[in-house]
Length: 225
Image (tube, rainbow, N blue to C red; front, side, top):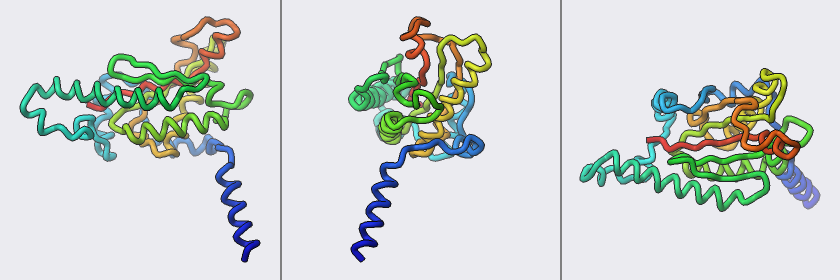
């Protein structure tokens, strides 16, 4: 009996320490069903909102549960104040949890932007989530599950490449891989917009060190109004 219990414990420990591996690419469509493969524009968010709500999603006002108070004031102004407060809390939670190399959290108006340099989430020489990436993305997923009245744009970027089609495909692979991970960790795909932008919008020089920074995934998180 003791040997049996030891064997079970060993199995649990090994399973718990097993490295994350993305599912087969052929199955990604199943994991990402419900995600939108387009930029998260205002019109795209408006079009997606009924789908999001149909999947059980709520607006920030509904989550904050202050709708009754809005009847006694300017509803639009109160909703805006709620969104600002809600997103400030989200920004603080992400910032406090992600003080790690290769990660940054920024505010962009009402939205929150999380920049994930590729080497902070992917294996160096393989298109796979690394052990550090598993930890970083698991932390992000945990926070996004709590602050779930949000849309999430997952955008992949590369450094400058001669083949623009290859750059776009490479960047989309990164974005989809992160989307699959988040979907597996409890983030509803009805919240997701997934795009690969290739070498567009560099955030650093295209030198040896800048290229490492430009290879990245950005999560732009926007409140659902």
